[in-house]
Image 1: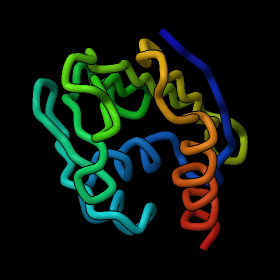
Image 2: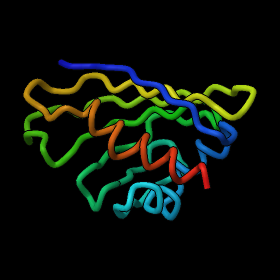
Image 3: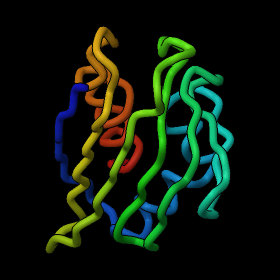
Length: 128
């Protein structure tokens, strides 16, 4: 199993960033891929036009999101990976720490994918 942790600063409140992640319209606008999100624990979500699927495992408003997570690159026999997002208030906004763990061996470089397809577009989206 593979895991990694990355962090980035965003010039918005932790509540705003948390809400955007779980909002279908905002999530889609940020990434450019269609997302169908849920703000409830135990409910499913999709992102990037169905490439990403999963279930909200734990939601602590403005503080933490834990999701089971997989892409269409996963083999049918692969278990879901685990995505943990931690939102920390800072003086000028918030820091988002993303921990992606339990990734099956042989998967693409998701660390680069998170940077390129989420963190960079999020920085652009929230700087407007």
